[in-house]
Image 1: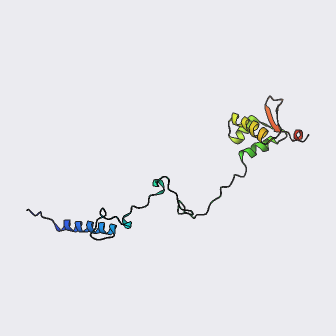
Image 2: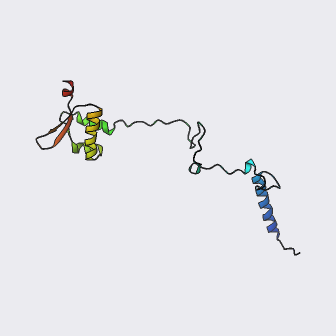
Image 3: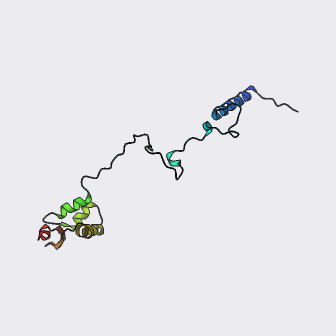
Length: 146
């Protein structure tokens, strides 16, 4: 039998590796493969790596920020509010003006006028062609009262 020569640095590295594995398992002289211990359990997975189907306990937050719920606030004036305000003008409003005010496409504005203003809100929407040839839409409050 031949004995291989080992240097002291190899022995020191071996001892460091063995002590590091003992520290990980929590027990000296046993390996992680033979007896798994609670300390040898894998680290918890991050938010992106969480298993599907698992739920977080009540009150737990996904970030380090406090657990208070932040209520989303509604914008002070929605696009629908802008359209209704313009429709209530005595002069009325053109389709192009509504497109510029909301950023919607023409078919979306027309759909809002017929579906929401006329049907859902039940307002009396009138459409008139002015002297300059432009169609103007407005809400006629006097016709609704009569």
